[in-house]
Image (cartoon, rainbow over all chains, first blue to last red; front, side, top):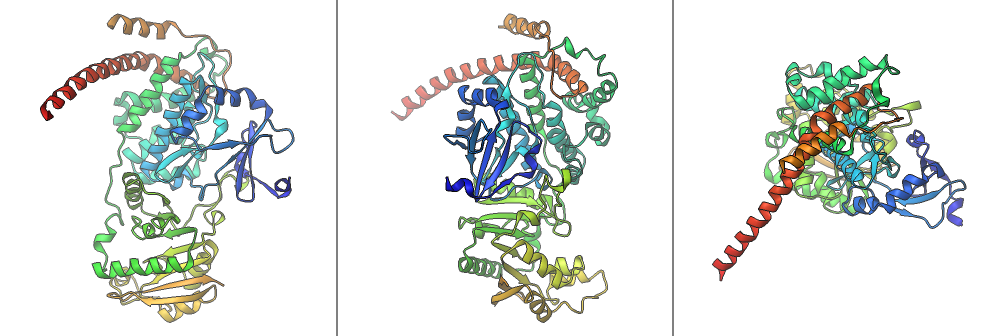
Length: 462
Length: 74
């Protein structure tokens, strides 16, 4: 077969599970299942679980090839290549909450079909249009009567702990997921949670007691009475139900961060805002990108200009409130092709995990066909002291084309940034901006945004 | 119904089956699950039965209501 001669690239994060492997050939994703996993895979299909989950949109559809593609495999599946792989430390509160509830529903449904989830990793969930979707076919194994949920600890570390910290302590603690790649250790969650959570039976048991038991029995593994005790399926369903009720009750409290109300405080008139939208639309039509990264997107007003044209758009911002609003809007209006994410451009997601290859950096996940950087340049250049040339180089690394807005020093937003600091930014001029960006891009079009002092550029990579 | 709930709750406590091996929940996580299972299992059974009773009542009540509204529109 000619297709087999094409080079195969193995997914660097799929080494942990000996049941199979993921690889890419051209633009197609293949999931290989090894013979050791045969009974579990067969049960996934004969029990009807696979059909139920894919029909409900909970599991990414997989198509089984007639024959395994590579020697030594039991089965090979082909699946859709997702336009962007996002990670839990880039998700907002409601995204993590939806991923958690999906995982619990999966476990409940699996138990009803005589199976169980052996992993409850947040990295097995991705966002497709307005829904969280489970992507790992090999996480389902045959349920053995009396056996507890093997992924319970992982679920608490990946989902429950971070959600409790975000909801009850501080939304920014979600960033601990960047440090702890297998979820936040429960003793740390227990330490960080307010004391009153000891009075909540679900939190006291799933976190505080759980953390204490981990420490207590860690040293006495052999003496623990685990060999004689089991957990009935009903009791396990009770635990899942308790987790579901607890997570559903969690809300995200602090709504007053820096950018949440940005659009009500801009110096744009309604007319200028509309003009900017029309210009963005015109530029997009000229380039016809398949993927757009809107960096510094706030609540995604302009990202929607792209996504509504059927272009897959990553709509990122550093402010969790703005991204939360963006995501809730995607869900509420069932919007397609839009992925809101929390990304701090001054410190974008790095490569993480074993040998720095398990989780890709932001740059490694690009380049996008087009990058949109609207009302962003002054924050990069003035608030973060990044010279134009470095901003241009970064934009070039993440995108093949660029829609960028130049905001002059006379603009009131820039004046605000300069109000409390010395103006050391002599090179912050439109002329220098064009000169520096011209080293990496060709300026294709440039239009002054009517009713504003700003200019919108369309550039393509040199 | 209460008897059934009580019976099933008792079954949860008595019906623990031996487990000879487990993968990697960690001993502490394992013990925690057993403890929480005892705590919430009975409540879960009661909740499931209560939902069943409620939905049956609702479907009966809903039918009557529907009939009534049909009469009105006629």
